Structures are given as structure tokens and as C-alpha cells.
Length: 219
Image 1 (cartoon, rainbow, N blue to C red):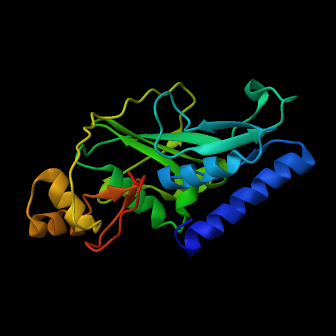
Image 2 (cartoon, rainbow, N blue to C red):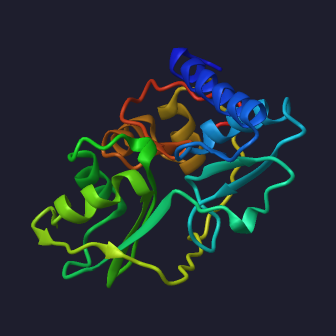
């Protein structure tokens, strides 16, 4: 753990593992980003007798997943997962993932209850914890100035991530603006502008400060 927030997260994860091991039943985490998944898997190595599945709720490589922790005598296929897929048709194809996330957060829902958000030209999907699905259905009736009507989607959902590219650069500093400038071959000021506009993520979290420090294994 690199800060107090991560220390708190690890303590929660250890508690989940201890419950699964002590009580001998199925335990779930809430949704985790990529950094949290790294911390989770580091703890998982200490509990070799437990089985673990990371699930995102759809057929694809999820960025945000929840973990299912269960003993050998339980069949994973018989476990009821605590997640729900919600779907709405779109009348405005200019809405983005960030718009839907902001609208959900405005309902005072903690980020860890929201999984991936998938938006295309015709529809949007929100994968969420079952404990907040009713709130989203009843209260998330608009995003920006567009009406939404979320309903439970009980059909298979397939989503393939957009193309990504790996680049290697040498930087003098691990500040976000320095790394972005080097990777994109832009000036420092251009990198700062991209960051302040919310166009840069580290471990799937938006960063808005140019002096944000990046660590080894961050994505």
C-alpha cells in the first residue's frame, strides 16, 4: 500500500478473506479498479485454500471487477452474483462514459458500487451492485439534458475494449504531466491541458492534477 486510503482498502480485503476462511461460505468484494485488484491479488496469495473469481458482469475484459471468494466444496456456477446490468436507450449519441458516471455519483452512490459503464451510439449499460440498482433505475432519469430510462438487462452482454497501444519512454520525473508529455510526444503545457480536461486516467481513475505521482506498475 502506498497511502492511507490503500491501507484501509487492504484491511477491508483481509477481513473478507478471514470471513471466507473462518465461516466457510461465499464472500464478495465490491467493485475494484486496477490498482485495487493488484492489492487484492497480493493478499489472495496468503489464502491458497480459497478459490477466487474476478467478474465484471459481461463477456469481455472488465476494467472494474468484483471478487468472489469461496471454498472448494461450493460450485461457482451455483453462486448468485450480487451484480446487475442496467440498460437505457439513448437519444443523444454525444453522451460519454464520464457523463453517466457523473450522473450516478450525483446520487451519492459510492464509486465501489459501480462497475464498468459501456456507452455506444444507441444505448448505455451500467454494471452495478444489486444494492444500488433500484436507486439507479428510479432516480437516474436524465444525463445532462437527455432523458434516460434504465431497466434491468437480463440478456448476455458482450463488449470488447477499444484498441490500445503500448509505448516506451524515458522520463526525468514520474509526475503525470511529464509522463503524458513523453508518451504522447507533446509539450509539458499540452500535457497539463489534457490532464485538467479529464482526459488522463491512472489505474482507471481520472486525474486532474499535473503533479500527480505515478508509481511502478500503474496503468
